[in-house]
Image (cartoon, rainbow, N blue to C red; front, side):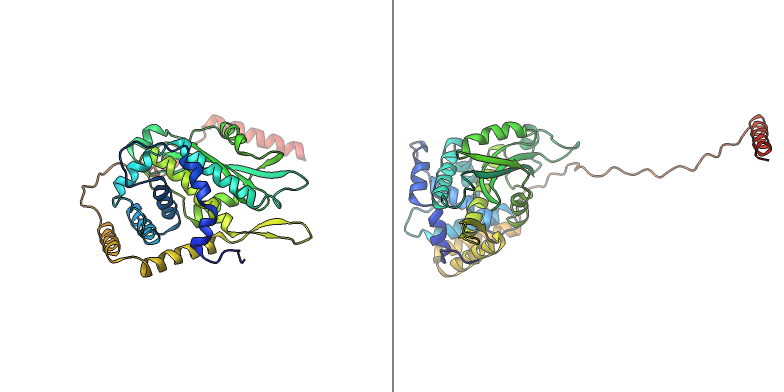
Length: 344
């Protein structure tokens, strides 16, 4: 399906425009100390980590930061370490994230306002799903246990999707033991007027877990896990919005969502091409050095722990053959003879 924008950079600028960042900056009041991680590079690098590939969080971070530097060569460069990025991300307050998500929703509503209502109503579908997290001590302590014994810590995500296009609208993240009804009440404030909503939508969560993929999160602390889950949902929302197009099949303007997989491959191809063409000598040396260090593995000592696994299945014991007593045999023979006599 063809979209209006052919350049990936121009397409994402359409959704993350200066007005969106201005609204988010209005609620962002960082400390006076200077930081390499402003709001824009912080969110964009985390978004790029959602779309790019890599076997580890460090490899994804190196690729995402190198692509951001290649596209913003005349601006202030962000920090170079994953630890500094995580510290800055953990300090990003909740109102700033909510202001950013609300600004993007407002812009999406204005872009498709003429074709997302049916008979004056906006039809929304909703559902929830759990996301597995690493087995770190902090996550196991704070997120609790929501499944079987010794199960991994989890987050619970409830989302609202524009029906029937399957376009992600809003979401809320909580611990794995959170109530889905509480999440529904929190999402009521994000719904537009005259909304009719139903329950059950599995396609968005399947795309989120299989296409991105986000079956398991990378972050090992509670603050980072929440932020990774929320911004990765934003990455899915922008991915679906980029594939959306207006169609008039039977005289009625509707929203049709294309293939998110094709759009994701397109983004990854653009990242690879940009790193090979636009990345300068010094950022390239940093990028290659980071990849070499990450792929070589860390020198720290590994911690062994008892991981949950299936219990050993005991083999069945030999059967115990019970022998009838003489008295019971006599009663049985008497009963059988009496039945035979009655049948004659």
